[in-house]
Amino acid sequence: MQRLPNVNQGRGSVPPSAARRDFLRLLACAGAGLALSPACVWADARSDPRVAARRGQELLFAGRFAEAARELAPAAAAMQRDEWLWGLLGKARFFSGDLSGARDAFRHVLRLNPADVQARMMLQRISMFPVPAALDAAEDGASVHVPGETERRAAAELEQARSAAARNAFLLRSLVLDPGHGGNDPGLVRPGAPLEKLLTLDLALRLRDHLAREVPTLPVALTRSGDQTVPLAERGLLAERMASGLLLSLHVAAGTPGTAGPGFAVWAETPSGAPGAAVAAQENAALSREPSRSRQDGGIGDILRRSLRARGAGRARIAAEALRAGLSGVAKLEPTQSAPLALPGLCAAPTAVLLLPGPEGLDLPEGRARLAATLAEALAVLHRGGA
Image (cartoon, rainbow, N blue to C red):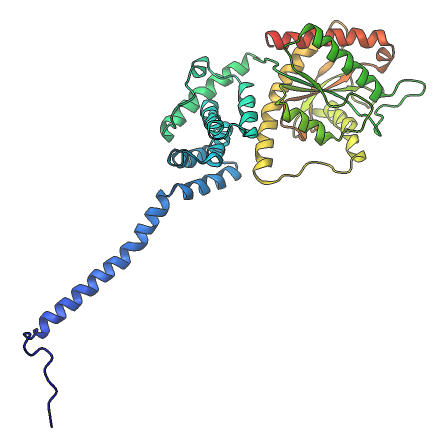
């Protein structure tokens, strides 16, 4: 039988043991490569700023603001041109108490896109909260701090902000007046007497004119200037668009047993006893005459609004107490109540509801003129020097 030619002939034969060792070495190298590659991919994913941005967004949605800020800070530092990411970082810092860091982030957004309305609104919102004076001197080009340093700064700034709030620091920068009811909602109806919607509108117009003459530096807007129907959500949106320092909603106390008495009320999840529940029952009745109960944005919009609303309620109470003291000479007002009111619930701006005392005192133009002048003087004090 003819033998096949030896393929190794002329090239030198390889011993079987050497060939086996080479083959095993090749398998070992291949196995090591396969074992290490997932770890390398995982490490690359962990260091990818886009992955960190997604994690930070998820934490922000979950309301874990400090953790979100820690995830987003290095991602934003690596993606300097991403205005969306810097906006997320600003929100995370704001709601975790790092007001200075939030301000830096939103300023960076405006450098990238000067037309960004949300960043401007957030910067206006930050300006309403006490921030240590030393931080106001920071340059616009402040760099992103590492998480550890950010946390230390945030803790110090938050403590100083709380101390200022404890001193009842409040400076009224802008005002939205809301004449209650209007259009197809008459408000309080009494035989032979002006309707509540007309009383509140007249008082609001008088108050606006007083402020225009006496405090021209205070921006003032009205949610309605005539007898038209304005849904509560639209009233709240106007205040938010103005970045209102205070939304003051004017109403009239019925003055009958079992109804809310005259005084101020601010938003809270639960009412402050029977008086607070009475205020909520009276003023939330307007919802039954509206086509839609509330504005539904869901997701991050709801989280931001809840946080802003809680902050705004505290500031609204400070303003309400100052105004109550200013009105003491012309009206006897009950202690400020807390209640799950519809209008503040639809608005992120600080909101106070004023139930004007006794409709009888408002029926005559002279009574409304006196109340408008006194309330204008109290608001001027808040604008010029704070409470």
